[in-house]
Length: 148
Image 1 (spheres, rainbow, N blue to C red):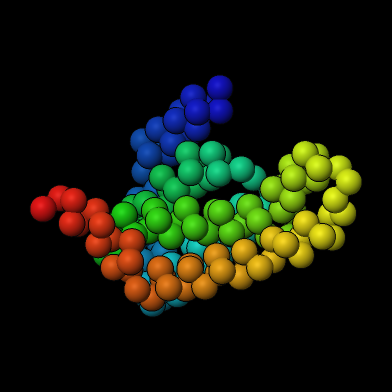
Image 2: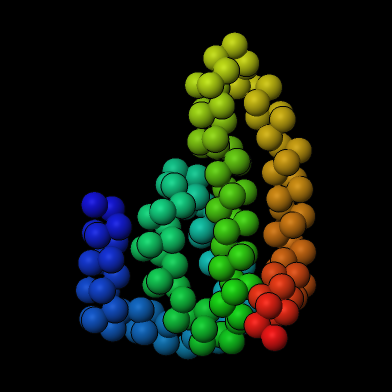
């Protein structure tokens, strides 16, 4: 049901030209593409707290894809960056849904201890995001090698 509704929403949004209009509007601001990309990742990160990845990938990403394409970014790199951002948001407070799932599996563990364990991994995720952001070839070398 969610996939069908998301596809319908995306189709209507595209047919109305809203994604193209939004792309032109944002490009007209003359902001540096890297600043816009960081803002997009921040939006995805914040949306990743209360939402699961499915609605974000099916609703938000198709709206942002024309903008990313117009800015000249590699779409494989962008999608990898989105995946790492969503995984980091899934682990991070204030919501950290994965912590509540783990608490449900092991009720004797304190939520505070679960967060403490997750913070170390989240720090590594953030470092990985920065590496991906500033060294795009980390995400694109394998697909490029497989194409040859």
